Image 1: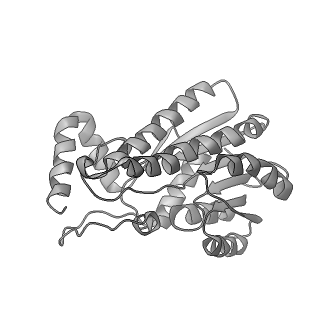
Image 2: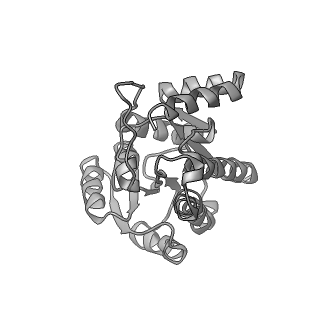
Amino acid sequence: MRIADRVFVVTGAGNGMGREVAAELARRGAHVAAVDRDRCGLAVTAERVRAAGGRVSTHELDITDAAAVAALPDAVLGEHGRVDGLVNIAGIAQRFALFGDLDDADAERVTAVNYLGTVHMCRAFLPLLLSRPQANITNMASLAALVPFASQLLYSASKGAVKQFSEGLEAELADTDVRVVTVFPGQVATNLAQNSGVEMLDAKGRKAPITKPQTAGRRIVDGIARDRYRVIIGTDARVLYAMSRIAPRRTARIVAKQIKSVL
């Protein structure tokens, strides 16, 4: 897909990968409608987008609010006149705990943000995207949608739902001009845990490959430009995904053993 002079809506744009995607789109000549709950974070992102030469509007919004999301397309049209792409980056993690120690509130929270928020956004913007000669939807899944992660079971399930929804939507839209890209990042140096209100595990000195958010942002925009089906980000994601295709049970148990050792 052509990026220059196109208008993209980016959720989770107030920080992390969402901010880097917005900035990278602007560097390639696009304009951005930045969406997040964090007003201060949006202001910083807007400065980054303008510095890169893009036109930007900011929209303070909770993607779990279906009514607010339904009203967003008109607000974006009022600022930009059209929408060519939707990039759903917003998401949260669950607290690190085994399934038996979690409750319904944990499940409802990650499902509402990660899965239903993505569905709300796609439902709201799909009619506009179908009217464009070339359009894109990009949805954020996770390595945890490809390899199950003990202590992040509900998060993994919510991202697995995003994967199935996103790839199913891509198949439904195959005879249209809308392409759908699904993103599967491994560990990226963002504030996901803090933004989710959970504490990170103490790795006890163990180190794993961590991708910089700027790198992730470039990879995601590359995926949009090239109409990729899947974008897998990070050495950890590529290695574990390859292992899971050869020995899925063994890979899941290796991951579980590592996580349980620091729980």
